[in-house]
Amino acid sequence: MNILKRIFNNIVSNKRPEIFLQKSYAEGYVAIPSLHFFGQYHTSPNGEWTVAWSESPNIGKSSTVVVQNNSSSQITCHLRSLVRPNAGHISNSGMFSIEDWSSHNLSGVFSIFNANGDGEFSISLNANIFNSAISNHGLLAAVQTANNYDHEDGNKLTVVDIKNKEILFSVNPETGWADDYVFDESNKTIRVSLKDLGDFRYDSFGNFLDGEEYLSARLNSRQYNQILMSVEILLARNDPNDIPKLISAIDRARQMGANDDKSWSAVSFKLEGIAYEIQGELNKSVHAFENAIALNPKIGVKRKMDAIKKKLIATA
Image (cartoon, rainbow, N blue to C red):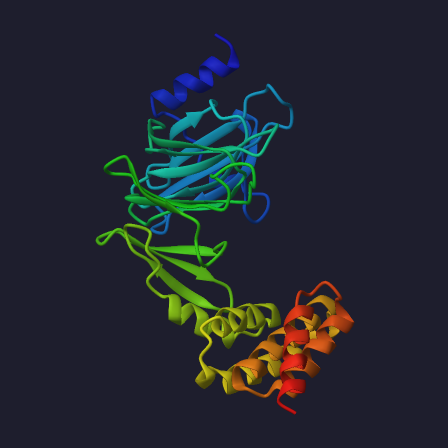
């Protein structure tokens, strides 16, 4: 019996004495010498379970995913079926998710397994996976893709009901790419967490519930690009009552660094011109548009500026 078979028999019979987390060499990495394994890991919120994964550097060679029950110190799962396992997350029940990245094109597979390594759900995606997560008790999971302009799978937030083995929703999220996720397992809703902005809710059908809160957070952000993008959305409402706060937000964005970025500085003047036009201050609008064009001749306001100039001449 060769060494690999002896290892496999030990795993199946649950007689492995080794606690692989005792072999941690660096933050975020573990080693299992008997399996010749070294890789990254994630531990469940209650500390009961750990999933570890190692991507083989050689195409065609087996990569490895291992699950350990930390109370019994037993390895319950040893998978070699994935090509490029990455970004594992494990729940308090031992249910875990793993991303399988493609080596050749814009694609990936998001899979969910139970603690024994039995497949519960899998999604093949025609886009690179941006990130993913699983809920505390392993009832819900989320996966978000990066852009793929050639396929509808690009830039999607997909939430999975693991218990019922179905996709709850798959949408192009208004919030862009999330930094983290907070699940409400009872109501099957999800909050996406965005650094420096906060948490924002989607219901179980993928409807975005916190649109106004999200706009307000962006408008009051410490990032000038977020401020200016929210100003653009609010200007589209064409509400004169919004203009004072939007002009103030544009000034704040410039102070935060937009003035030092030629492209964003041009955007700030374009938005300022639109704001003054809505407010009826046409001379200020023309002046702002001229500044925008000076920074970026292709900013797209010349016709609007010329029309305002004609109007000023006609009413002079």
